[in-house]
Image 1 (cartoon, rainbow, N blue to C red):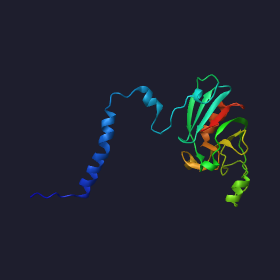
Image 2: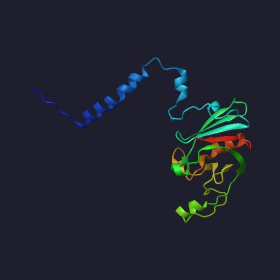
Image 3: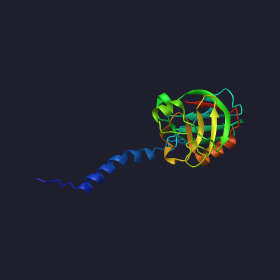
Image 4: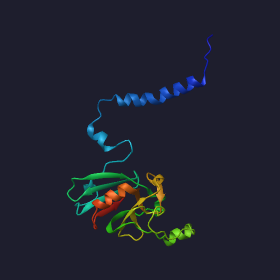
Length: 190
């Protein structure tokens, strides 16, 4: 009778082989098309088509996808399409969805907590522009009161459910988007 001698190393190596085999076999599939690769990248951002959301591009268009935590931007003639990673609201109750537009823009925004924030976080207080300001370096205000697309100094928030309703971007990315979006840019939050 033969005995099987299991070691921690053989268990780990066997587990790695079992987990990677399906991936390796899928990678050898020759039926992968360029469009299927472009539809989804490793960051799990899904491509969006502006025509699925708007009748025209107008001054430009933004779709903030809270599921994939990405902001999609198209310029007025559709020749420039960009995707930015974002932070999204912590809960569905804080997430406002629908159509709006950019009504005001500000470099170096100051921040005043809303009444509902003060109820939940009584220690919050007004903050002038600067490195501790939760709105980062640039803010674009939407038609909906207290909802913004803004930067953040806390880069750990990007890619997470971390806001009280706003869409946050890395400061260099909001600076770029800020320069691209005129007042009146249409926005859809999904």
